[in-house]
Amino acid sequence: MQVPSVVSKVQGVGSMFSTKWRFLMTWFFKVIITISLLVAAPTLTFAGNWNQPKKESSNKQKGDNYGDLSAYSKPMTCEESSKLQRSDQCRKAREYKAKYTGKIFDSHSHPRPKGNPRQHVGELEENGVTKLYMQDTPNTYKDKKNKEWRVRTKIANHYDGGNLCGGKITGFLSHGKKDQAKKNLSEIKELISSGECIGIGEIGVRHYDKGCNAGASQPESVLKNLNDPILRELMAVANENAMPVFFHYEPSKCNKQHDQTTVIKFYEKVCKDFPKAKILASHTGMLQPSELEQVLKSCDNIYSDIKPIMKPLGWRGLEPANNVEMRLFEDFAQLIEKYPDRFLIGSDWKDGHPYYADRPFSDHFNSIREMIGSLEPGVQEAVAYKNCERIMKR
Image (cartoon, rainbow, N blue to C red):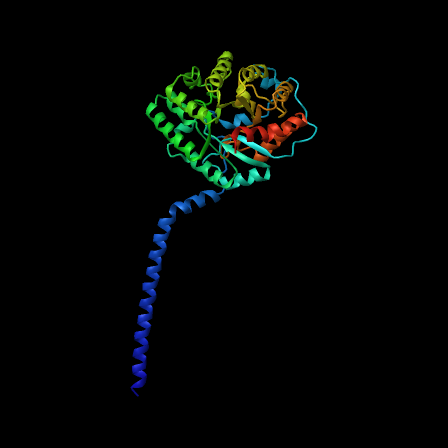
């Protein structure tokens, strides 16, 4: 009669032991998992950022001195656009017979931290942009945590092309931050040596104040005479390595007219001072065709990228190469055909910026393909990718 009692006690002890064992094992695995998560946190954060859904941007947000962005999205006639520029925006434009369908290398792009790198790579693939070259912006010097560089590095790790650097220096110099400019110059040299940086750009101070507020910084303060020793050392590095250098030198502020000869003289000086560097006048130099031709004639090492201007109100006084219907002006088309080895595509697309919230990436590149398609057939591939391939060397 005692057997059942003994068996019952044995079973009770076993059950109690089993419960404690399960508790200990559960606690042990929780500790291991917690430690693993802490160790892997940076990697998981990277993966999370890579896959995060793109944040919706409102056109009423403010960014980069644009003010209320909703105003820029309103349709504009060529007569209205003409009031914003020095040239007639209703002049003859080039029609295209067939849209260019080949590959495109984009020499000039600015992915932003609020964008979605993975989605952007998908957009590039879908639109036949087979190489992407990413640059600093005139305001990148404010990015103390290097968020933009990290986003661009993520894309560079997953897509063909590369990163340019050096855009922070003029921002530091224009605000009297010499020590930070020197430190940044040392960082740039290391990035070039490691192959992480394949060119310099975009060099500028910042965009002119598109809201017409007083006190806007202007490129003239740093770039006009190109005599700052830190900036000249940066250019010397680019010259030694025969690297591309993209300049954003704006010739006017708001709707006020400036002397365009200042811009022309700048390019004539920089191309002669640094003859091995490949000097690029960004956004067709923000000059009229005759002025840009004067720049191209000054040196063989000067080039220019072509940016489609979709919102004339955001490009006041900067002479777009296309009209309000996104067609190349005839005089710009003829200039490109006259110098077919000097022009390349530079979309200036800023993934994640509210200014672009109402325009799909595919629309932007559809306009680019139509512009390329309006050029003579023998020029199209040179502008679309061959010139960029030669200048970037990768």
